[in-house]
Length: 416
Figure (cartoon, rainbow, N blue to C red):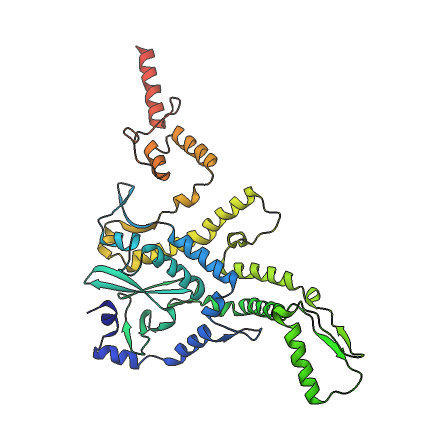
């Protein structure tokens, strides 16, 4: 039986009873909030409508890429050493392919997209007893949550309308900002007015330029036109002046006068509003505007580098930590945790900086004995060399115990 058949073919009596006990009022409110929330601009704002905004799509891609491009592995601690365990059954699932349909990159990227837009990511866990064989992403809109005390259960709805009830051992639920412990806050619902204004601004610009960028006008006629003549004139005028035809020359008969109304775009600060809304959308998702190719002219190479570093520290690192702790709790068994196993994103490559800065850092760490040659080569994706695991210690650098021993030896020699 396929994984999705097993996912939705549950027919246990207790599960049917659980389905019957689900409170639908709150689920309906969440559904309306997520899929048909009208913003102050009057534009309904859903996940798919929000992602059609260029700034939103760019921010979501930045977050997804930042999560997916970093290796995610299983480690264990042995004598204060962190060792990557490629033999653990979760290693291949997290590092290479969580299932036969996705790579680790696409899996983690989609988790980033779901978290950024909905505040939640739901993953079905395929396991036999305590061994996990695969992870399958669920559509956030297909999952409803019910809590019985502190224990959440998940109702997963299939496209054909059938559903099943699953517990925490079967659904890995990752959240970001929370108001309650069971569900993350929906980003699009919270920021619907910001996103709605961005959508309204784009709609206005599209409508304005689809009319050839022509302002509204008043046409004065000497006599009253019959409805038939007026209809004919309006049709001919639209054909000549609208859309891609806007550059053509229009002719007016007799003493008719064309009085254009000055475009209000300057007064409405159309361009300024569009630029400001990009920054507002970036603020919602915690992404620096420069990362979606929107920056002011005062940015320099040095400041841009610091902005990239800030993105790693303030946006990606909390996300890494959040998913690591969630995976440790819900994917690793208690026996694994007791043995010192943990999951970790290796983000060292993102923090390497420029070649000159890395060279200076490695040199200093090597000179003080903080890093070995092979540790440096590993960070640079280079193979180890023989003798590269020796720790270098400068001749004038000694530990306190070594210094005390030398002083004691000198005293003994003097007495002799």
